[in-house]
Image (cartoon, rainbow, N blue to C red; front, side):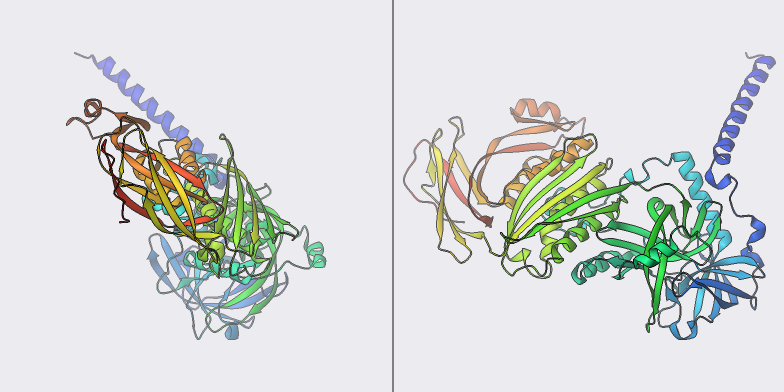
Length: 639
């Protein structure tokens, strides 16, 4: 029986442990950036409960250049709980030609002051509204959500913000096979949270100035980014005299806030407005950019060329100027960044040569490493680099050379030759570069951990001639073959605008091959990839990052110019903890598949042979044949 002193000692021990835990937690909170000096003084901004209809205030934004202009704002009311923890202030705006232009894309974040105190940021609007009525995000809630994100960063650690995995829920073997072959481009689409409408109002779409992008590349960007609230539009860089004149000017409330996605020979940057600056902390937008939480984007000053009025929502035409820090927060009430520091960007080089005698051109860019956007940015940069050379020819052959330098792994390099109808026309670039973008997506969205890509180098050479060939017929020399001999297949292919050719395939049949009926599958690279994924399911269920890399190599090692023949062997194996154990006797397989445990996934293996051709092969066919010691002479018919 425990004594009273023992119980008392135990109680003191538990109490002390509790106090240590509380102090540790308090120390972590106290160490967060938001708790440091520089957080806005609550006396400098309104609490939303203090806002009343009829209050009149002054807003601030830039309509042309970098000159701040004031507009009037009258509070119409406050809508509480338009979403969990979110309120909205309704204001009628006046001045700065807003009665004509309406609420403007690029105004997001424009601060509104009442009696000298900051009330909030212009953030929401109705499309086709007759009056310039805006939804204003209370600044008190912008501070609250940014502070919460700062604490999360402090506790979890800020290192590797962009190295987290953006896991895709559609991680399946069939979808991966389609993605890696370029047949499924949706796998590399952005997966940001987007920005839902509140009380019928939509967040003001964030315009994205695209410099050096062709109309087709811009349309591709718009298709992929519009669902998450970003609106790419043709733009251009600011003149050199403007860049020189504006260099070194600080952020102030109401000034343009540019957020870069791509910099270099091509430039892509979103634009909004600064709501508040406190020390090195910058607040803006009043709504999420993509709802990413912790993030890492170049934070830049900007220049407004003009306002383009439209019936739906007008927009500011802008150019980014100078990188001054890192945008590290993207939450439901706005974005925030810190002046100083340099974002971690991914360098990429694209070399394009169109025609045998043309001069190769190299384009160099840096892209944000944000996992949800990176595949789409890679696709857009590659497509744009080709588009700058003009429209793709109706008939073409493209030779692709790709190198992905990976941290902690050997470079992932592959060469490919592509030709055929799917690579021509408006969607040709998407088909050409789908395998590259989807390889990046697989590395980014795998269910384990994102592989860090150190650099991407891509070379593409395009010739205005089509070198594809379709498989028309397959004939076996005999539908019976003896063990120890070869199965011989005659494949008739039809090259584009050329005479038919016959390619001979010979597949050795092992001497110990059991007698019976089998199926020979003759086809292109897609057929070979499907069979490999079916036979080796462990490839699509990687247990570590090395397995993810192996998954990609399984596709990139195959040649599109080869015709392959495959026959499934009758023996089977199993996969144990990611390791393949092929050709196991039935008694051994039974050891791994008992009623006391989940069955281990089975694997099969193929007898394979292939012949390289001068053509990019398309199509597949299958034939039945029999392995027997009595060979016979009957001919096989296509099935």
